Amino acid sequence: MTEQWRCAGHAGDLSEDSPLEFKFDDTEVGIYKVGDEIYAMENVCPHAYALLTQGFIDGDTVECPLHEAVFHIPTGKCLKEPGGRDLKMYSVRLAGEEIQIKVE
Figure 1 (tube, rainbow, N blue to C red):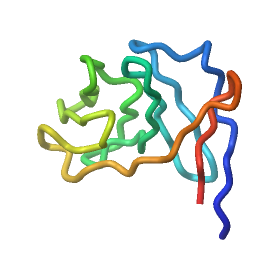
Figure 2 (figure 1 turned 90 degrees about the vertical axis):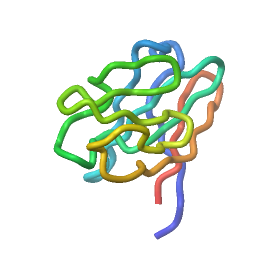
Figure 3 (figure 1 turned 180 degrees about the vertical axis):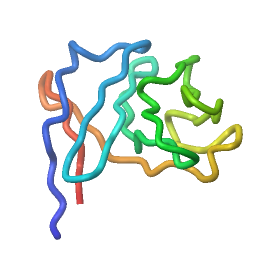
């Protein structure tokens, strides 16, 4: 399968305390703004099904809304269990005001 960029939202809808959700095929991605940077990572907590975009954002981390696992937004690294593993990251870019995610 070839890689492609898909529109995942509008930059004006994204803020540091309000991430965006994006779904393609069966994959759910969370899009976050930290400072002037935009990051995209797996949106489902690996410990148990919970959408991290519905979690608690504190600076550059997000806490799972169910079991308090904490993940580093810029890297996807699990900082506090019971996350179980690091999260998959996705390439993200701005094309004008359109947020695009690279999917494989």
